[in-house]
Amino acid sequence: MAGMSIIVRTVARFLTPFLLLFGAYIVVHGHLTPGGGFPGGVIIAAAVVLVIIAYGLDSVLRGLSISKTELLESIGAIGVALIGILGIIAGSAFLQNVFPTGELGRLFSAGELPLLYLSVGIKVMAGIMLICFAMLFAFWREEHEH
Image (cartoon, rainbow, N blue to C red; front, side):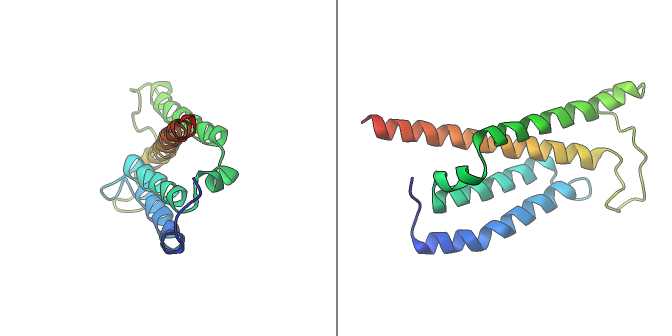
């Protein structure tokens, strides 16, 4: 896949940093506002898909390989599991918030929730990107078999 026209590339170049920033904002502020790891991860993955559409899959795979994406997904899953196990180690339940909480409305006020949302965001972002890679490779294979 070679990419799109100069108009699509220009719009993608303009929008991608804003999408990445917005996705990161949604992940980081998920415990204070509607959002969290899942919607933030989806927004970040959508930014990567926009770059794939505009510039082609090869340009994205030069900077972010499939193995790196799989590693990110594993790191996210391990993060969620470790945060969950902390509750059990502390003598409570899985994913029980055992970190101290702060003042209501502050960024660092939710104990382990920001770390959990960060792990979920990484897992979701990498998972959706891997799904997109798989669909694109299947499409590419179909295109080259005929």
